[in-house]
Image (cartoon, rainbow, N blue to C red; front, side, top):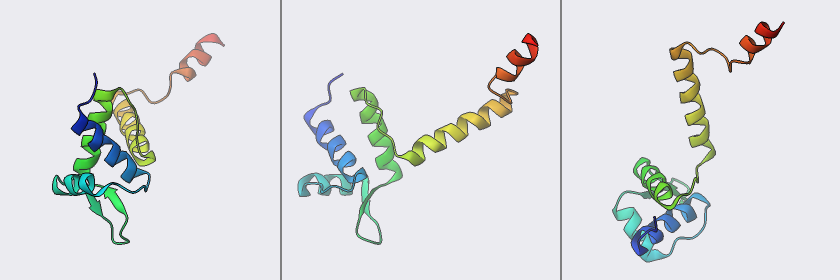
Length: 101
């Protein structure tokens, strides 16, 4: 699905902020007013929790997968924890190796 012009501008602004790039003032004002971007103590732009959610939503609509490393690691930890809770303690390779011996 194609993004609207507003969605495209918003996604571009969020991605620019992720990369430490300059965001044009009108788009910056819009993102700050909507609570998607904030300034860190050092003056650098950062995505808020709401901004991360919006970035992920727009990326999904556009068919993109753009994530911070911390988001990837967080998802991996959540999957591992869910696997342990479900009783799957390994990748399954151990069972296959034991069964073939």
